Length: 203
Image (cartoon, rainbow, N blue to C red; front, side, top):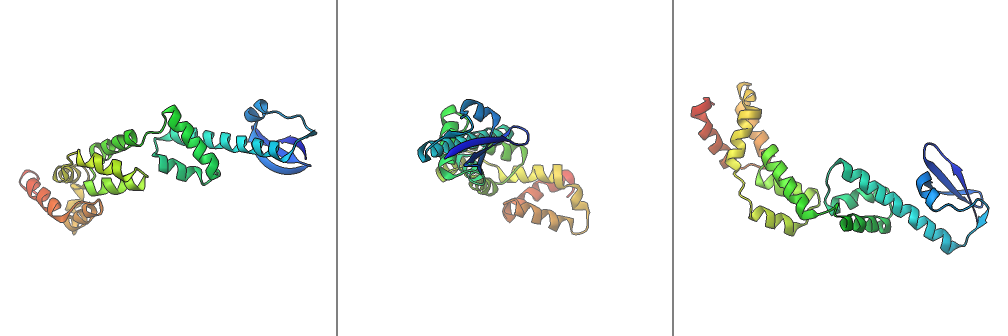
């Protein structure tokens, strides 16, 4: 098989075998793994090159996603599999773990703090959200078992900061209760929060 390359848009480099397009990489990779046009390579050499290209693509995708926000291992792998093969995804995940850029326990603690302090979410919603983001069940269970989440206090803060004006609308109370229940709060906790706020805010 005879290898050659063509420059594409931007930094893209298209690789061809026997003048037929095969795969795309970038100029940085090609500078490191350059093979002169017209060179004959065998199937083993070609597959090694393809593996290296796919691995680089997976690692770059990891860096791109992690630069935007932290991810759980499962969440990151799910996103990687949309554009890279499973073997490359696993290898890239291993590299991120090796570099310390992935840590499910650390990620779960940061997510818990965000959902409780910034979002005032219920314990039930937090559990659901952590599972949705791929945090392992044992980490979720351990973290929530050692964390006291005051659902009533969270409801009170949401009512005062977010829903107080909505209570003035027609059927406002019913709509606010429905919104709070969608966030995973129980009716009994919502009722208790309203009782606590009634005298102070005349709800």
